[in-house]
Amino acid sequence: MKFSDMSLNEKTLAALDSLNFFEPTEVQIKTIPLLLSGDELIVRSQTGTGKTAAFGIAIIEQIIADKNKKGLILAPTRELAIQITKDLRAISTNHYLRIYAIYGGDDIGRQFRVLKNGYDIIVATPGRLLDHVQRKTIDLPKFNLVVLDEADRMLDMGFREDISNILSRVSSHRQMMLFSATISHEIQDIAEEYMQSPTLIEVGDAERKNSIEQNMIRLTRREKFDKLKEIIHSEPDSRIIVFVATQRVAEYIGGKLMDQKIKCNYLHGGMRQAKRERIMRDFSEGRFRILVATDVAARGLHIEDVAHIINYDEARDKETHLHRIGRTGRMGKTGKATTFVETDQVQRQPFKRHVRRYDPRGGRSQHRGIHTRTRY
Image 1 (cartoon, rainbow, N blue to C red):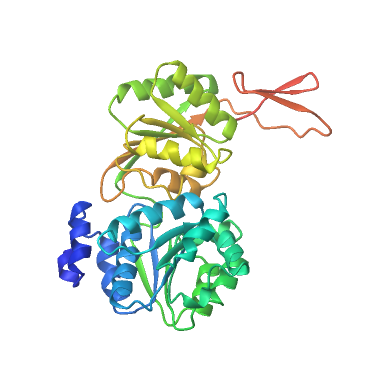
Image 2: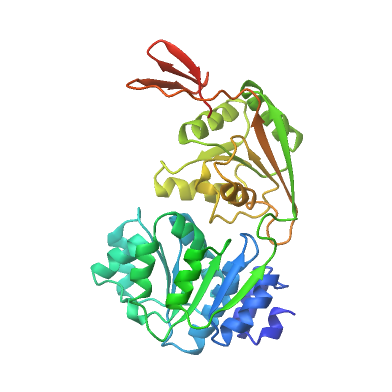
């Protein structure tokens, strides 16, 4: 099946051609026709399968056919909200729809001003959306096309109450679309309460992506940075994301790579939003090829042609690991993921009433004269 076989508007098809979207992905083939028919869907799909375009095309097509329709897309993070907005604007470029991202950390006064002009699609994080609802700058009953994107992540982040608050206020004559990497009992509860006979669509392997070659390297902590440099130099043309555990380590490793004259930058949640957006834009546009990041970059960010993911620090759990490596091997392409496994980890000992001072260069913590090794 091709996009031209889906009875899409010619202007939409032209935009897809300009974006080099020639062949629909599996999730797009399975969902777009059903969504255009008004079906409600629960879609279990890993990141990088084209799900944003799937619900984006369906919403845009319905809005241009019926101006009484309005779309609301809930996303767990501001980075994902920004990325979805960018993608939907590109798909709808020939239709001139009013599509806005509403998220915390952005100037709320600016958001007031754009919302006064009206809107067709709002992409929002739950907290900031409810803030606007309370201020009466967004009217939830107007929304009749509703998407929960990365629903599992929103629940993990504690948005269950906010989601219920929002879904109970949107139009009762709504069409809901729920996209998630996993389908938990809590997600099933939401579907049972707010959806009408939804169809379950499952795409790909729920555990890991076959397009990604994974390997582990066992080494001591002191060997990690040299091995990182070795990999980077062995792949001079590759775009690489290096995941680390903390903000401080992101800055430290990023700074050391810069000292080695390697074109790189670092990203973490402690940065101002404008700076984070600039760094991601520069990385996406190729101004540097190595990004050192905390898990703020593990979900919701779509960067083309990331060839290699390096877990400098192991992920805290299996799900985070899957989302980290999901930054490569996207849209049917192949990718590589390498995880550093430390061989000299020492079990932390509990200390009471101590003061800890951290030196990232030596990886040591000082406990009133007692030195212990701490993992970073």
